[in-house]
Structure formats: C-alpha cells, structure tokens
Length: 176
Image (cartoon, rainbow, N blue to C red; front, side):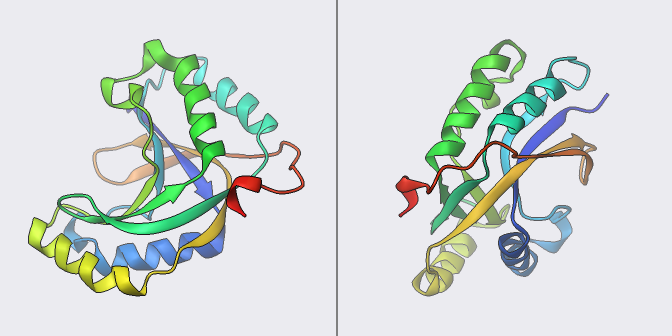
C-alpha cells in the first residue's frame, strides 16, 4: 500500500494563484502536482487511526487565515513562506498524536511554505527570486480543511477531503 500525504486545503482563488506560479516556474518534466502545503509526507496507509483523527480535528477546527509572507530561496528552488500560528498548533497536535507512526522528516516541526520552483540549479533559483521578490506583495488567504493523498511515485491520488467545520472566532487577531 502506498504511503499517505496530508496537505492543507486552501481557498480556490489562492490555489489558482499558487498553481499559476508553479506552472510557470516549476520544471515541466517534474511538475506532476498542483501547488500544495504539505503537513505530513509519509503517513502509514493501513493505520486505522489516521482518518478518524483527521475527521475529529477538522470538526473542531475553524477555517484559518494564512499569510503568504514572502518569497524565499530554498537552495534549488523558490517557495512562498506561509505564516499561520493556528496551522502550527494544528500540526503540533497531529504530530503529538501520531508521533510513533511518523518518519524522521515528519517528526520535525513544520515550516509552512508553497513551492513554486524546485530541482533547478541554485543560480537559477537565485535569479528567479531576484526577479519575483521585488514585485511580490504579501496577502492573506484561507485554509479551509485538509486533503489526504496516496503517493504513487509521481502524481498523487486524492483519497479524501476534510473541511474545517469548527466555530470561527470573531477574528484572527494574529493576522490583523
């Protein structure tokens, strides 16, 4: 059975924006996926607690406001750094619940980002960052749930989406 990947589901307008950047700058021969924010890279597919845990957490979680803060160099590519304390908190809760199931990569804290270019020469990444960063303006967008994927060696197969359905606070004070 293929490992599972868990990503944040984001609102359609922001998803379209990130997808356009990825389509434009990600090497086409390696671009099998839409833009995404990965929370866990390798969850065990046969574990009976994965889906019930995701369902319970999403039922209690209101949608969350995220900040696309800035473009950053990731060595052989460029990503958009995402800031969202509620996302950090949610990830921490999941990590604690699943600790014994996680790979070393997934046991680490999360550094939220959306990759728009990867697997290029460092000079090419630096050039793209120099080109795009001066015109990039930070903006807020909404995280609306979680998506569970099955990894198939290239393209991912979507298994299930889980909406955040918890009650929303009056405002996300960290984002104002």
